Length: 168
Image (cartoon, rainbow, N blue to C red; front, side, top):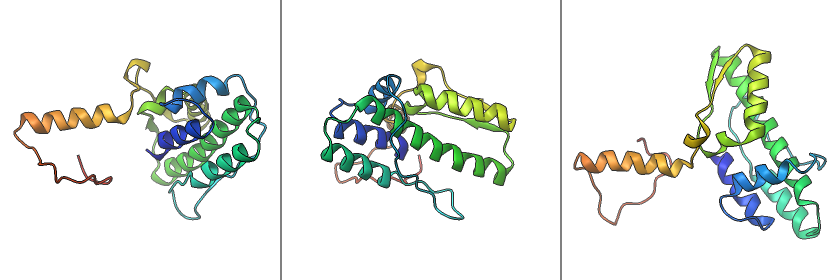
């Protein structure tokens, strides 16, 4: 998901090591979300774009490398979660869904869990998360899918190209 990639890029910009998600989550707990960052929404769409917030952080950090990183992380985290919550609520209402699963590496993020649990209680939606030990990067899921293709005798030569939308 673009969400995890946004965490990694923001972490890299401000000098945190990979993977960025856990590092931003930890540092954000020490800060306050007091830096105004852009929210991107598409009218009549449930699409996401985190390019505006990534660019804003890049510009902010390069103009002021002494900026409080904890506050910047807290502000980034809160902004992207607000964007996720808004679109998720729209999708839940549009599709009349009452159950929601949050997965992938970012599902280990404290504020994501807290925010979506609160939203679920307010909206009457059951929200499910994997155990923390299962909240790994999606690369593990891709490797697992590859393993099952391999044991079924399916393989590709080195000319195979990455296709982001490829069905598993």
